[in-house]
Length: 431
Ligand SMILES: *Cc1c(COP(=O)(O)O)cnc(C)c1O
Image (cartoon, rainbow, N blue to C red; front, side, top):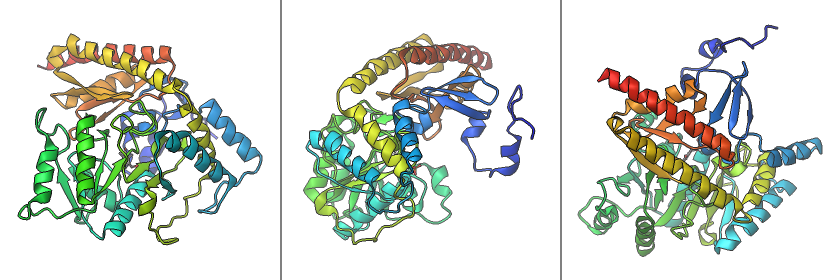
């Protein structure tokens, strides 16, 4: 057999055999083979720093020793890997640890549902249960929201390109302006309340309001604590369920385990996925307040709701949240990211960039959207992986693993700094 190792890895096989739908491999044109924490290598041995972290599925890094060790031991001991929703020792250990480490210290009480392996499964199940509990059908969602690619999740996702892919009308959702949509100083919750209470508004009382506390795919829009609390309270006053989609912002991305910890919310339903499985293994959970857990057995189902390898890695990953150490590390490193981005924006006023995001998901939004993609391409050529987000892909975003070593973070930021300089040179030439 011919070896794949060449000077410049070829994407021929993928171009020939894989569907046109593939996307990330078009931005990061190489063939990857190996990865450790915040570094990833291609088949020719080229090293990249990973500021993408599986879109938030790798908060604990690639091949985290602690998590991988547990999974390997479990497999070598012939532990059950697939179990539908049968009771297994691995699931039991996850449930207990989640209770002890995450829910109990926060005074939160939830039943844990395993809706299927991916984030969108958690969102679909959350909408189903909200509709079942309230007997209402509408879901109130927000501009620039992203909730997944299945029909229900797409119906509450803002991006028109993704929505068009559905091929059928998307219904039962009503979009409202997210915090900051009309700029600072406009409280969009006042608008929402007015519409909900006005019998002439045309807006029916919804079953639920679903939101992200920071819109990741939507362009790193951060909702304020006050806004979040107002949304929670307007839900309470009207018997609307509050669903927080913490699939990307949860598991520490914004600095705390739940992204709503600081705001002190107690959502009725919480969706988690991406990094809950620890090692990048597919896993999702839907947290439901006990009084709303009205499912009949098997009313929601799925073959892959018992990924025991993910349960093992997930249980081990929760050890990171037993003390303050990781949180403090995130804070320290997030500060370095913030200061660096602020400096870059200041040093290159001609690029018209603005700082966005918080914690371990920050980035630069450009007035000229195409600059974000150019910046990411320049960075990739220098060995740094980062992606764009936002409705016009106008934000170059950084989301390294939370466990990134300080010196690797510094190196990644210095590649970004070089890339900004180069961007300023090329963009200047084009003007
Ligand atoms: C990624 C994501 C989803 C969808 O998760 P999948 O695993 O891709 O189905 C839903 N909501 C948010 C906020 C996400 O970031």
